[in-house]
Image 1: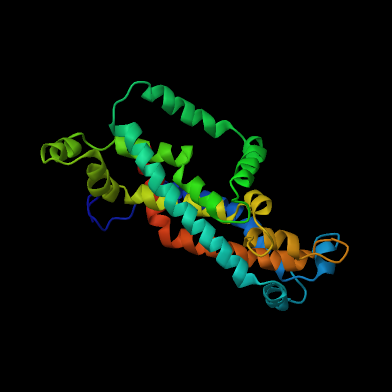
Image 2: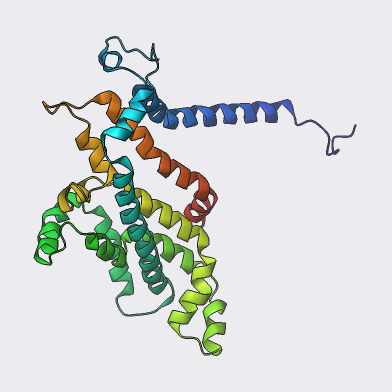
Length: 285
């Protein structure tokens, strides 16, 4: 059989290189999945096993009832619904508003555009704790505490990281697209909605997943702005499973945390192709 045959086996050196590559990838995957696997095991143990020294890696008697107990002790579906509402509202609005701002930075010309874009990127370095107290005072003055309006306003205001993603993606599209549309009499709003936005589905899906994950996992803002009935699942999981003395019940917290993480994993698995494509193409010109 000739060396150029499509059925020829790859050289030994190439196969060894692939084996090393796959081994490294499996090791990295295990490293990232390790904390989640430990969380699942913790949710199946008794409190004594969690507190044991040396560590018991595997549960001696699997405690499946931890998951049912964690589900029944609180209004799990109610808190999950609150988280879903807030995360969906914020993710949808911030994705669209960031796309609009990124389109402006990428395709429109204006004095001081580069300076404004530099200020926008610099704002990503500000920690959340700096704006926490002013944000609360503003929303308290406006009567928006214990409502979902703060997430609506945050969504309409766009966010620097997503603006950067959309700006990078839109900057790589050819100029002929808007030139042809302008010749046909289209305005910039029409160009954005009918030409650029439909082509940015990879960045749209990536931005939605990122924003949804941010809001679903946020603890500080719901704890600060929402009452117990309106709060999110993240706050409920961290503050509800405690004893009368205020000590956390670790096995129930672990079981509830597993159920809390599962929706995010499902959303990522469904949108992973668009997520990966959006993160890769947003850096290309």
